[in-house]
Amino acid sequence: GILTDIGTLSVDGVANICFDNNGTLYAVTGDGSTIGETLFTVDTSNASMSQVLTLGNGLDGESIEYNPDDNYMYHWSGWGSSNFIMEKINLLNLSITPITFSGPGSTLIENVGASTYAGNGEFIVYDISQGLHFMIDTSGYVSNHLDTVGQYNYSIKGLMFPKNIYIN
Image (cartoon, rainbow, N blue to C red):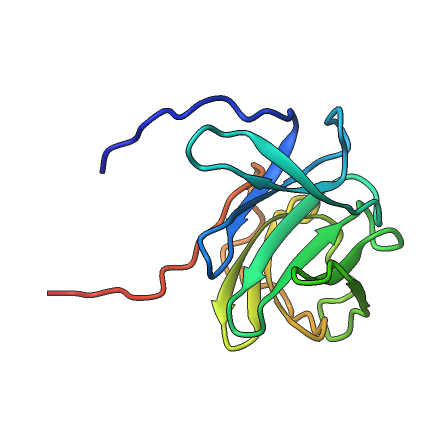
């Protein structure tokens, strides 16, 4: 592939990005940004950013992921199980719905640093604090961690799930 530099993001501290079904690029800023915990759109022709919604729930750590099956943006924020949140954002009216965690991994997960939509209402998320991957569905059900080789000694800040893999 060919990469083309279109510019520098106009707001510092972007923690995570994702596209919606229409090709709109969204970004969320972290607490360390000059405009922290905020959802933006990003102009893919020049990297300028437009503020969409102030988030503010949870503490440090921000991740967003779009679910093309229900047309909601999902947001994780917080550090530590008592301050960790998940919510869904309706991009048409910008309403936010909090989601309650359940399931065997719900007490283990503490800080989502990266997320990707895997399909069928499920996300793969990487927890920076635990160094582990988890599955979380749109209702907040958290499975036990997915990793079978143990914890990672580094932080992952980006994930993608290949939808179509072809082997010749």
